[in-house]
Image (cartoon, rainbow, N blue to C red; front, side, top):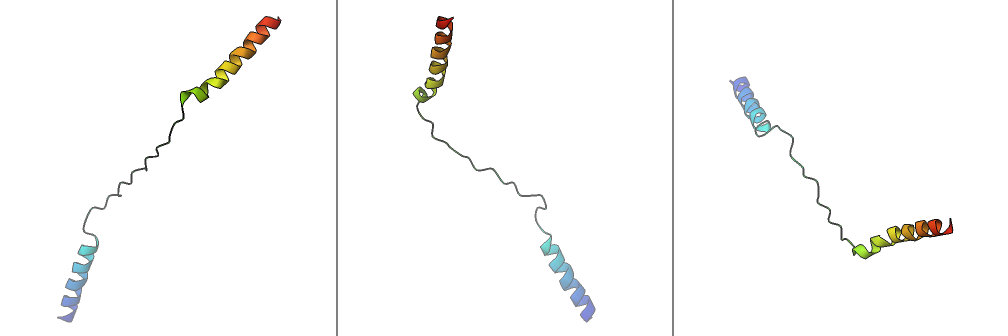
Length: 60
């Protein structure tokens, strides 16, 4: 009788240990928000290239 009670207890413990969803939990990536600077800072490089091309054309 003791073996039957022990087997029932182990079966109950095993069934509760595996209860629930066995799928992997969904982990969402954190959202990173970057502050942008004004667009006037990004215009210096194209303007510099335009001046250099203009100088190269004028010298030839």
